[in-house]
Image (cartoon, rainbow, N blue to C red; front, side):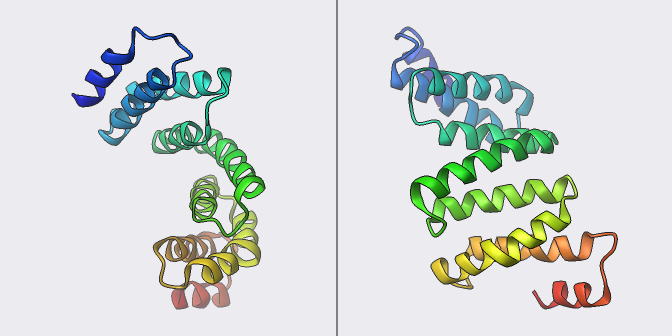
Length: 171
């Protein structure tokens, strides 16, 4: 109810108004969090379009849209956005930034859903997990999420070996 009230409050402002755009993002996020995904999708798409059109910060809008697409089972589309978000965060904040690591978790989760096990395994082993362990520590929830994704890659791959299964169990 509050998200709708916020949207109605700022609806009369010009399209380029940052508060109007923010209220649209809050509404889309609230619909998504309420599992009203089909309703959230067009709101989040419009929010992203407005942030891009008027040069507003779009990474949050892109992340919310990617997560909604993921929740709807549209994993290929979510992965495209996740890759863009990750690349932008790496360029802007570096690989050790907590939000960059969060975006890498989202990206590898999408890779798992579309069965890109080899790509995800290589990325997790060679790049993401070493950085997360060093930056955040082995017990951080993001590091543990990346470890979980690696274990899922190893055990879900149709050509997994006994060693892969042992490694997945160890993780």
